[in-house]
Length: 224
Image (cartoon, rainbow, N blue to C red; front, side, top):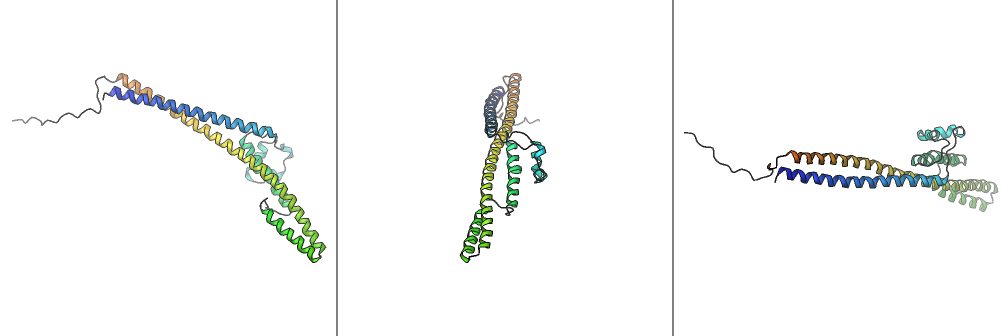
């Protein structure tokens, strides 16, 4: 095969591959734009706003290392994935934790309060059966607190979960954008290599052959 023909084949294949990479990059870029626009639209419609800096308590600012984001986004409307993550993990959950502690059930969650309420209901029933009105009233008070807290935690965990789901969607969009940039780079590299291949084909002599048949071996002449 002639070297020029081989160069043209590889260079043409490179152009085709570059075109496919660019198409894939455009598709991923479109996915990124859709994801981020969707996240912004959905979050903006909820009109969730961070508390302003002067309204944040020291407990809210220092609850966990990541709580500093509440200061960063103070007073802003929640419209991006990172903002949704911050609001869910460090604002809603801090308030849920504080509510559980204030209600007398530190560390409780919506799920764990189910068994707590069952036990308290049994205590109320047992106290009433014994005629112990004081114990029944005390158990009923704790049961009412657990019931109210469970409703609060259900609302908080639902909103937190939805916001974190939106955050995950935004992360997928950002990853698609990163992948698109990498693919664009590979496409540009293939264009350069293909251009080099075409140039090499033009400067290569037409009669230059590669992968041709090996020359026949003949013994060297013997000198007398």
